[in-house]
Length: 380
Image (cartoon, rainbow, N blue to C red):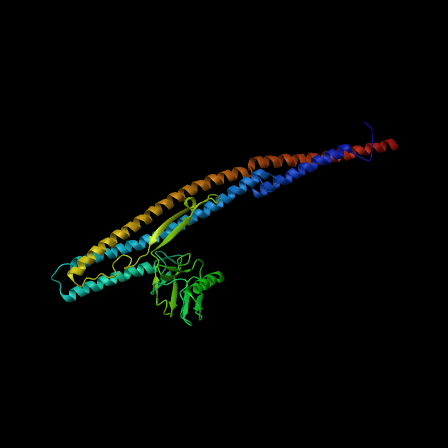
């Protein structure tokens, strides 16, 4: 082998090996400091893609668990309120049964009816006041749509010039006012309401349309209460309609499934009031009316029991879904760990190896540099 002084091949080889060792040492130290085997896409591009997908699934499922817990909480709130309604109705049965017998004086019948009417008022109050996270459980309080009292209307029906239609939206807090011009029609009112929705004054989904010859305004997409007033003689007074039910929808999924039937559990919760239960016209003033009220009360008890049964079935379904999700999260986390997490024992062994290789590499580089000094002896 010839002697040269411009290049030391052995030193270059030692330097390259030392650079590789230092790169591996740095990678190992990073893995130990983060606990992760994959810290950049360069570490394992395919593994990173799989791990990120699994982590997204885990995040979606973890939130789905919280969704299910919240849904169960709402349903249990509704069930608790209905349980109290059942207790009130049982007391009403007692009162109606007592009032159904002859021999009671007028004062006694009036006292029974007073308590009975108080029960009906409390049932309506429970329906209006039972809330979960600031939202009414049974149905929105107030009217979700309004209908005109005048019939035989069409979109081309002319409105009274100078009359107004005012809509107050509880969701947006906005107030929409339409003032009819000399040639305004119901179609112009419909278009103005559509524009108000686009502008955000009215909630999304709020509409005005002709149904069975009457003008119906609302409801919006989420059945939020509105208040509509009009002084137009063509329309007549507008009468409010309360939602017959509300829907508790719980999203559960891993972020990849599609279709509402695959990702949601919905429970229809009927509105709750004395009127909805068919008791608003009942009284205990006479034996005949008391017997009629007794039949209506028993029907109401059956209705409430059916609603509680539906709610209970949904709670059981959400509990089951929650358990399944817990197992999914556990298994996905295990899979993610095997891909992403560093094997600490193996990594520590690598650290020891690379530390030793770094020391030997430095020594080898030093020896390679010193070997070139032998050329000087030829010049002595």
